[in-house]
Length: 343
Image 1: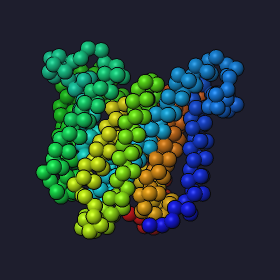
Image 2: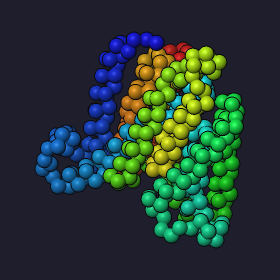
Image 3: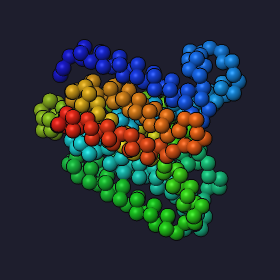
Image 4: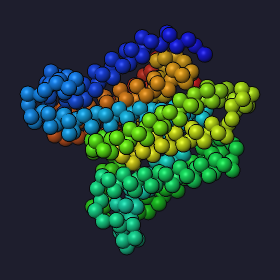
């Protein structure tokens, strides 16, 4: 693999960009906060304005950190899936894990209408939605792992994951058809995605899950590099394919499932960031790609969240729409400019 020394400057530029995006995300919003106040808050200084202090510490900081975790986690899980299936169109949700989380949320919000209270758990809030979504994603992940025990063909596992997604989407459609307008609207708002609803306690739990997923991904770096040349080559290099597949699936499930549970189903980031990173770094070495997609995903998510916040306006656009509107043209431009896809 390539020497990693030549990537020091690109990584330095990425970290500087990440810091700038973090500062801009905190400064801009319905209430503009001076950069001096923002830097003072970041570096532990005193703030002259009590309202700015409250906004930064109780809303802007948790939202910015959530955007970093969401962008990093989705980008990394997308990279894992694209390498495992050797498919450039694979994303973090191809195993149906996001659909399982959506089904959990749909049963909580809309299930009472169809099942006469069986799936009604009382007050629906961010915590109960996170629990229901987590249970849905964990159940699908468990099924996928059990299926992986019986199936050796990786592409068959991909198709089964897509089928799980289709089944859960069909159940959600049935629930949507029979539910009332208020519940349907509530579910639609959840499906828009948001990074601004997490408390510090929820953020801590999401961080712990993210760290576990990242550690598992680091453990899988050697198998991931071997899989780029096919499963037969990986076997010849002494890679335990079954064990590696479980590690990759569990890492993706933890990352994508937790993010969907806490922030809703956010599209595009997991699919596009790995491609953007490969084009910029011009490498397929996962020793470079894993840390690169973590930083790149965080940057793109911070930018999208800043745009969605509509600075100086009280309105907030759906983050799901912004990630696609902003990101898709960038990917198209980059691929047209490079004239080929690195994979």
